[in-house]
Each structure stands twice: as structure tokens, then as C-alpha cells.
Amino acid sequence: NQGLFAFGYQTKFGILHLNTNDISKVAGAIFYAREGEYNLGELSISGAPYKLLQGVSLGNIISLGALAKTITTGDVVIYGKETIMMTAATTLTALTGFTGQTVRVVSFVDGSIIQNNARINTGTGADVPMVKNKVYTLTMLSNTTATKD
Image 1 (spheres, rainbow, N blue to C red):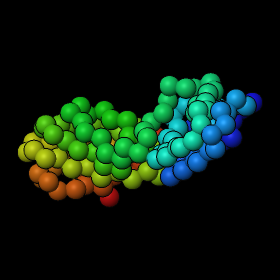
Image 2 (tube, one colour; image 1 turned 180 degrees about the horizontal axis):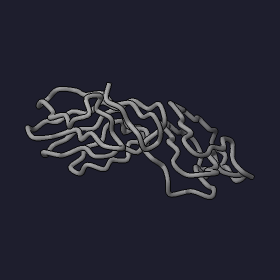
Image 3 (tube, rainbow, N blue to C red; image 1 turned 120 degrees about the vertical axis):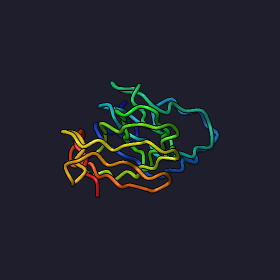
């Protein structure tokens, strides 16, 4: 049994509420992971015990509703994230995420930089010194290439 929902690479689930009865579930998992780098989104589950997840890539749940990520290093995995927050001066050097994903970046301190390189195109060909508390938007053109809007 492969589960009620099967998903693979870059599958993103939104909001899902499962309300089961009080009978224990033994037939199979709710979700079957065919490949990694998936996002289960926001789950709300009530009812009897059940197997939530099984498959070939069990260790790749990206987030369960956490849309923001706090960073202090520049090479960032952003699957399922909408906001990156810098709490220390950081040079953003690379993003890895979903093609088409848009992420907002904000630094709460002075001295952070968005570096122009092969992985991030700032649009000017130069590094962008970030203004404290200003929000910058980047869009993923591929899984490993972003452009600043």
C-alpha cells in the first residue's frame, strides 16, 4: 500500500485537515514519499492512530507550516520558506529552492549583503548592501539560481 497521497520532488501540500474516526488505521500511510524535497505544508489531524508517512525518502520533510527561516550563514536552503531573516551581519551567497519560488529577505542588523554571483543575480552586476529592516525580494529561476526583483 503506497498511501492516500503520493508525492515526489518539489511537491508542495497546502493546508490539510484530516479528521478520522476512532478506528485504528492499519491499511497504510496517509502520505507516501516517492522522492525527497517535498513540503507537507500545514497539517491538522485528529482521530485514531495512523501511519502518517512512509516511502523511499522519509527524511526530507521541509517544513510543517514554518514559513520563515532565520539565518547566519550565506548558503541557504529555502524550500517552502517565504521569508529569510538575518539576525547577524550575513552575506547571502546562494539559495536553493523551488523553481518559481519567491522569498523575501530582511536583515535586522547593519552590514548584511546580497552577493551578485553565478547563483544570485542582483540585476546590477554588483553586490547589494542591505538596508537594516528593508525587505528585498528574490525569485528562483531554477532550483539553484535566483534573481533580485
